[in-house]
Image (cartoon, rainbow, N blue to C red; front, side, top):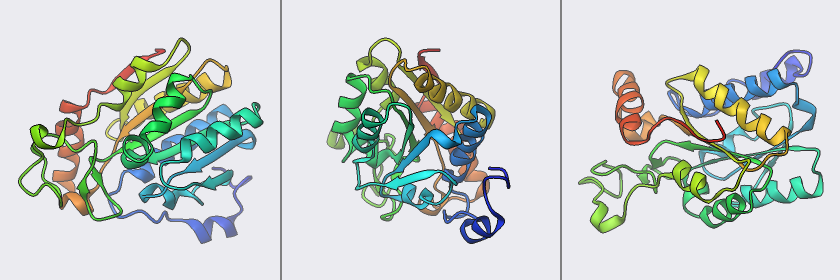
Length: 243
């Protein structure tokens, strides 16, 4: 954000961000901030963040922000949007907040085509609690709770969130999957999701493939290869609805 709206004293207290080195959250949020600036909607935005690593974004932007209970960001943003339709409501969460404890809220908000924007960071693990297997953990991927690799026959298949959302939303919805490995594309998807809400068309959902070298136990080269090649080989990047 510009100095005009972010006092230097405030920026000094809250920057740099509090995420682990190499974490992808900072890049996703940078792209979101740029999209908000380019659309000139800062004064209208209400930003909600979930529990998990995403909660560390509560003071990332100089905008109205609320931190919700785990998995409840989507209904909180839905309530604000219904009470104040002129606001631009953004729900930010990890795969746990959207696909596990918050899955019922995501499904119902999407099926009702609520006029909010949901952004979900997919790093394939429960990062804040130590790297356990998450809904997005890929087949054969090793985590703290799948040390021999995820077995789909025993634990179920990996969640394909955007595909699910695209299937249950009505006309006017926008659904996409981006990656921090392509920041221009990711920002474009986030901007389209916000524009979709601005136009009052329907539910907007963007999943962003992200990194977690702390729990992946990868160096810089291995981290980038995993998100750029392995993850995109399983989670297809692109726009799924409302292109």
